[in-house]
Length: 96
Length: 209
Image (cartoon, rainbow over all chains, first blue to last red):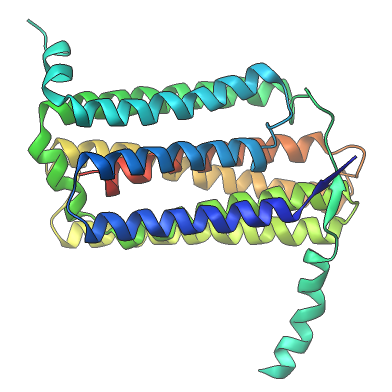
């Protein structure tokens, strides 16, 4: 069995492009929920790429892979939630 | 210039010469189990910081929307590129060891350390730049969290680079071979974790506003 090394070359170039793209978008476009969602999805994608290809968890131990991938589902979801419903989260986290 | 390229080209060609490496056994744990305990502990610690950031942000929306606009996005993006590249170089090093290309593996690790040092240099410059703009740890809550998170991460990059240096020392000693390189995988897994944390910190502090 062999693993194509070129795959991680492609992943690296893709990650570079996404990083530069995100920085350019946020510097040139007015902030909006759509931009937040795009950034959150990019964050999740970059995380999964590093976890799967650089960390080599794609075909590794299922539990470790699941926890690592879950991290990059929960955090981007939280990013979207706190930007979509800030008042609600603020009321939920206020000590009365 | 042409002479320099002639000298460098054969060395670089060694790095890209092979395009196939043995695939690791499915279901295995990369590196040793102890490093995964450390990785999950560190990621839990950073998760706590992210939760504090989220809660602080919803309570001080204006402050946290204005904060990223005061930071140097170019420095943040450069550091993201440096860390993603270093992670890639480390992955290439592990693949080179699997092909028993020890010299190439060592060169990839040196490139990873160089990228780590670029990160540390840019971050130091950024801190100095911030201070010149009057942005320090006491400026406001956003900057308190910014310095706490980024300096914590800075320390991880610094000692992670030390671990990569140790990897080079072990490679030179002949401790890692195509059949036995668990130690290098352990260092690599930890380094990738450092990269993963920055992948989250960058949008939180520099991008989202």
